[in-house]
Image 1 (cartoon, rainbow, N blue to C red):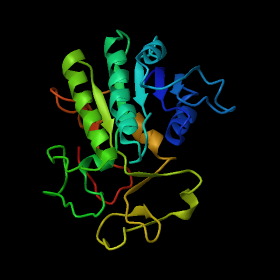
Image 2 (tube, rainbow, N blue to C red):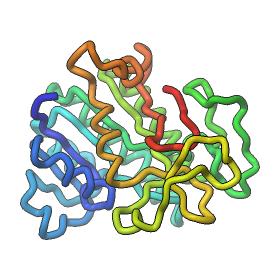
Image 3 (cartoon, rainbow, N blue to C red):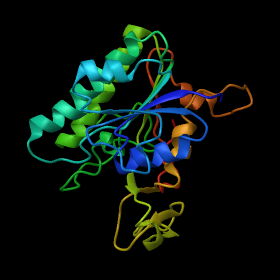
Length: 257
């Protein structure tokens, strides 16, 4: 993969910060976040301070960009719910529209969530309709945050149909911060001894991924430049819709794309 000009939305958040740090030495970075970056990142690339719900600002930040990694979101269900929907759904819509209308943008990576499936919502009564879960499994989401990811992915699909450009939706599970990583150990998830090892912390039951591993999964989302990569088809997805990378690294449940 050659040098790219990458717009990272939500660049001041924990996930955006990790991606900026991982990519800045090999790519030109454009940052967009409601908060100004901290001192150690204020000099990294072009910096735009504002919300993704501002279409004019998003369009300005998109200038010269060929790759978008859209992380900006309210990361959990919280009130007021209309603000969550505005940020997570309409914010995604504005970023997609700016990318679609830009002749230079080639790749769009949307950071979705494993909650899209609706299988981790309280009171935890939803069960998979079949296993292994794949892209044919419908979303059972009811939770506000999960539904915002469902709606945002819907607009990703329409972006592909409207602009004929690819989208990769990455659905990570719970992401463990760098600070908390030492508290986790490798082992089978509690109550599931036959599953493959995951990073777990007693009595945690969630599927996890470390921040230090996450940039790699995002890099794998870029289209392969060689035919040698067996994962190319997995990340390219169907011709009539966006590819979805929904195989969480180190996850107990290996979900095949």
